[in-house]
Amino acid sequence: MTAQTPFDHWLTQVTAPFPGDTAWRLRAEFSTHYEQAVDDLTALGDPDPARTALHELGEPATVIAALAHTHFTRADLAWMDRDGELKRLLADPDQLHREPFGRWVAGVALWLGLSVWLLFGLPGLPSTMSVHTAFGPLAGLLLLVLVGVQLGERWTVSRRPQRSAAILRRCWRMLWHPLGGLLVAAALLGPSLVLGLVALGLTLHAFLIRPREALSLLDKAWRGAH
Image (cartoon, rainbow, N blue to C red):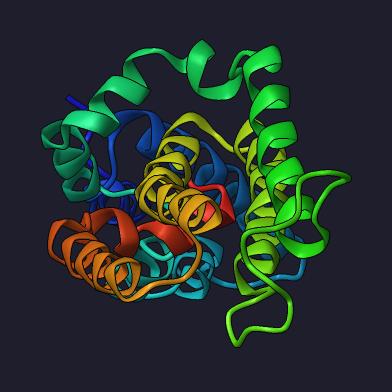
């Protein structure tokens, strides 16, 4: 049995917190970098190129901390496996990256039309929220923002690795569904005290059931972690 070199030991420590596919990729990247550094240092006449190259890689704890900002760890994946909605998203990667185009277009058209109606009204169908009231254009503007986010969400998710795409979609659904429903109610009923109380209730409910881990992983997901 071949004894581990100092670099092998370093590599084992650095990749230990990460899942198998990520660890394999990191091992390949670090090995290539290390071998290249050893060759360069040898050409420069370094008396101990292997030791110098290893020192330049950094302390394992420091490297792990840096990698954990841009890569999902085993602990992250353990939570993903416990979260029912994420588990469903990860189980069907084709559906995750390819939401039916017709349904997506219909959704965007619906929200865009509702936004235009709330802001400007339509011939024979005036807006239920007058632009002269304090809340007038607010709902329409919010819906326009959400339409822009929905357009960006499809583009963003389709260009992220599977785990990152699932986290982004998980967080998006958590925010979109209650807010979109509230804005539709505001469009139909106009601003009222009841809707204000409902808004507060939905906000509190979203806060209480928020997937904290998904939100904490949002930065990694946005960076395209694997």
